[in-house]
Length: 320
Image (cartoon, rainbow, N blue to C red):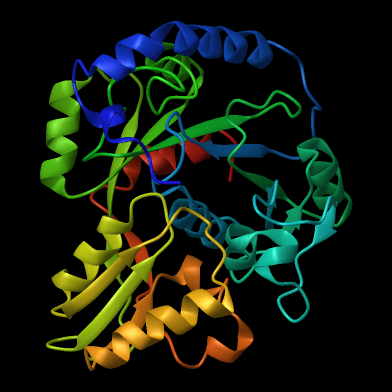
């Protein structure tokens, strides 16, 4: 399901009408995060967000995994059926088993999936992890964190500032920022500057932008039929335009939406009618049926930091 438009509109009547429920949601989160969780024997870095979905958290986790020696990742495996803890096996598991994000992250570091995050942390620790990266879980208290990093889409910010269901937030902005050690702003330099003018940020922050990864593919002028089932599909479409692709047709899908055979047949028919090539995101690509994996191109992206020093300083606290 795509986020309601009023989540990112000021003074929307629907948001105010739902605000009492948002207040209750925020209070529930506040009570939950006060609980004490498992204290791991190795450092635990939580990468989460205040918004629900679509902030750029997964690219940041993959970046951290490549920076930190001996890092292992733990995830709930949203959208997957396994209860775990289980180590993601790229030769055996599918997105239906472990979720799309763990399948993508497993290409960068050993990744454990469990509905119980504490169980996943214990499994990673037992397997020799030197540092554990929690993919999401900022509002989950079952595991104690040594560092907490929040990721936000700098262009969309924190939306209308209300908690679910009145807005996109899992907890109030001020409460979340008080527990965070670093804020990662993902977007263009202009997006970052606008964000910092809009919000009073008193914790360390770092700015980064998603940049297409050079793969040898020539996108300039390419006729494409683009589809994406991520938090904000338009970000992907913009990235395609930035590399020169000619988007003839596009389809925004729900976040984590299953790419069924029937859906792919419909998308393929639209692409053929427009003489265009199907193209999608890395995260969507891991959900493709096997028969379609060779027929759809992907545009991989990686983070490019404006200044890495704030991130380096935060990681130095753990001597990593």
